[in-house]
Length: 419
Image (tube, rainbow, N blue to C red; front, top):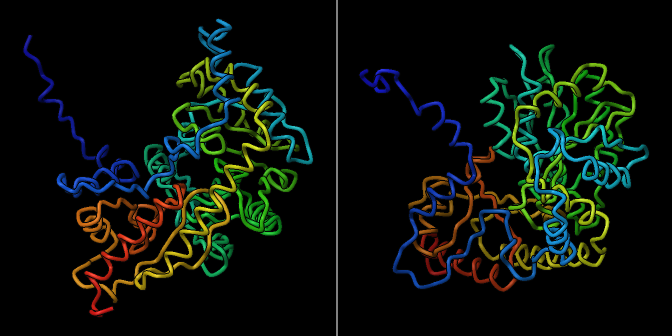
């Protein structure tokens, strides 16, 4: 029988369009401009994965937990769809520590990292004609997964002049009868902001008034090194139901271990009554699970990691951002409206009027990679054209060298010569 694959019209158009939301694919495009004969060290300021840097090595407690889980031979088989009970219980206890009410293990669903948690939630919430609110700037994986689920996306603004707070007036203007949820990222990716308790309460009260669910992306929880402490959105779970997304990737610096979760923080039981809880469980029956070995290690990781490890990581991040923020002021074409207080990245506005031969943020990043072997992320990928997203999770000395090269790049392309 003749093979008819060629007649079926496979078209990569839709997949290719969705892949344009990918930070990875954009960075790969930028890196195509690197010169092979440049002997200088490539400095990658575009991705939030410092796990290979010695000062960001994960806790020995986490490493030992993996070894112990392997040696126990208890975690070599399949896990339940929602995750093994001991892991869900430890995550529930971990989250409850910061809340005025207790999260049950039955309220926790495990996923292979927070990205899959986003996929699950977008798929479960998708309904014909529904729309969802995402922050701008934001994390582009949300847009990609919403597109795959045929959810209409509406973007609300974050206000740089107010520490990247949510523009609640723009939120109210976007909502209609088909709006199902709003996504809040705290600590902020890509802005490095940390919301105050007062602002989070305003968000919760706005969501209640509008009748929409809050999805709280707290992947960078507790990575705070400024004046504002981390406050989980779940503190306001009595005002409006919260779906919290989290993982061990960032706080423990182990993004490759792929362990995330969805937690219902909903003391009033709205999510169970509405059927969302059952839909989450049903979706996970047909979805991939985190490796059982990682699940088996979770209780030890969450319960035994020392406070010293966490404070050291935050101190390293603070030292890095202090060095970065000071140095970036020396580059006239950069406008930095906010010094980060959390997470691992920040947004810098590009003043193109000072530059010659640079068309936009993509062009800036491509030419910078070619001339200086520096990789950064164009802001357009996170929703702000002619901005740049920098990751500062790096040794301060490397950050300073990177910014020195960027300053040299600026001087070559500056419209004002002889600086």
